[in-house]
Image (cartoon, rainbow, N blue to C red; front, top):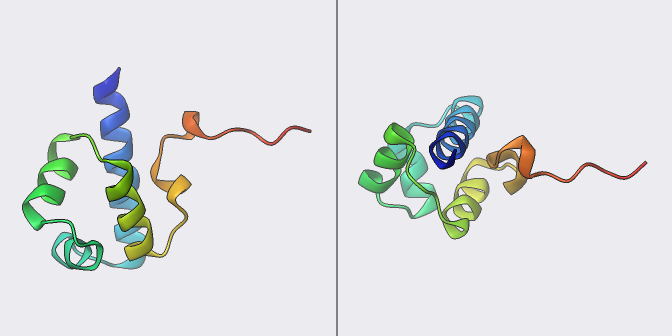
Amino acid sequence: MNMDINKEVANKVRQAMDHKGESILNTAKLSAIPYSTLYRKLDDGGDFTMTELGRLADALDVHPSTLVPDSFRQEDAA
Protein backbone atom coordinates (compact mmCIF):
# COMPACT_ATOMS: atom_id res chain seq x y z
CA MET A 1 0.00 0.00 0.00
CA ASN A 2 2.78 2.46 0.88
CA MET A 3 4.34 2.00 -2.57
CA ASP A 4 1.02 2.91 -4.19
CA ILE A 5 0.87 6.13 -2.16
CA ASN A 6 4.46 6.99 -3.08
CA LYS A 7 3.78 6.42 -6.77
CA GLU A 8 0.58 8.49 -6.60
CA VAL A 9 2.49 11.39 -5.03
CA ALA A 10 5.24 11.08 -7.65
CA ASN A 11 2.60 11.13 -10.40
CA LYS A 12 0.96 14.23 -8.93
CA VAL A 13 4.33 16.01 -8.76
CA ARG A 14 5.02 15.04 -12.39
CA GLN A 15 1.57 16.32 -13.44
CA ALA A 16 2.22 19.66 -11.72
CA MET A 17 5.61 19.88 -13.42
CA ASP A 18 4.09 19.09 -16.81
CA HIS A 19 1.30 21.63 -16.29
CA LYS A 20 3.86 24.34 -15.51
CA GLY A 21 6.22 23.13 -18.24
CA GLU A 22 9.10 22.52 -15.84
CA SER A 23 11.86 19.97 -16.19
CA ILE A 24 13.15 17.88 -13.30
CA LEU A 25 16.38 19.88 -13.33
CA ASN A 26 14.67 23.27 -13.10
CA THR A 27 12.14 22.02 -10.54
CA ALA A 28 15.04 20.74 -8.44
CA LYS A 29 16.72 24.16 -8.62
CA LEU A 30 13.51 26.06 -7.81
CA SER A 31 12.66 23.80 -4.88
CA ALA A 32 16.22 23.48 -3.49
CA ILE A 33 15.92 19.69 -3.66
CA PRO A 34 19.01 18.00 -5.08
CA TYR A 35 18.41 16.83 -8.66
CA SER A 36 19.46 13.26 -7.86
CA THR A 37 17.01 13.11 -4.95
CA LEU A 38 14.10 14.48 -6.95
CA TYR A 39 14.87 12.25 -9.94
CA ARG A 40 15.08 9.14 -7.76
CA LYS A 41 11.84 9.89 -5.93
CA LEU A 42 9.99 10.59 -9.17
CA ASP A 43 11.48 7.51 -10.85
CA ASP A 44 10.89 4.87 -8.20
CA GLY A 45 8.19 6.45 -6.07
CA GLY A 46 10.37 7.15 -3.04
CA ASP A 47 8.98 8.88 0.05
CA PHE A 48 8.71 12.66 -0.20
CA THR A 49 8.98 14.56 3.06
CA MET A 50 6.42 17.19 3.96
CA THR A 51 9.16 19.81 3.60
CA GLU A 52 9.94 18.59 0.08
CA LEU A 53 6.26 18.66 -0.88
CA GLY A 54 6.00 22.21 0.45
CA ARG A 55 9.05 23.30 -1.53
CA LEU A 56 7.72 21.61 -4.66
CA ALA A 57 4.32 23.27 -4.24
CA ASP A 58 6.00 26.67 -3.92
CA ALA A 59 8.26 26.02 -6.91
CA LEU A 60 5.36 24.85 -9.09
CA ASP A 61 2.85 27.47 -7.86
CA VAL A 62 0.32 24.89 -6.68
CA HIS A 63 -1.42 24.30 -3.37
CA PRO A 64 0.37 21.57 -1.41
CA SER A 65 -2.83 19.51 -1.25
CA THR A 66 -2.64 18.96 -5.01
CA LEU A 67 0.51 16.90 -4.47
CA VAL A 68 -0.98 14.39 -2.02
CA PRO A 69 -3.32 11.49 -2.78
CA ASP A 70 -6.99 12.38 -3.08
CA SER A 71 -7.74 10.03 -0.18
CA PHE A 72 -5.68 12.31 2.08
CA ARG A 73 -7.96 15.29 1.52
CA GLN A 74 -10.90 15.89 3.78
CA GLU A 75 -14.20 16.44 2.05
CA ASP A 76 -16.06 19.59 3.03
CA ALA A 77 -19.01 18.86 5.29
CA ALA A 78 -22.31 19.70 3.66
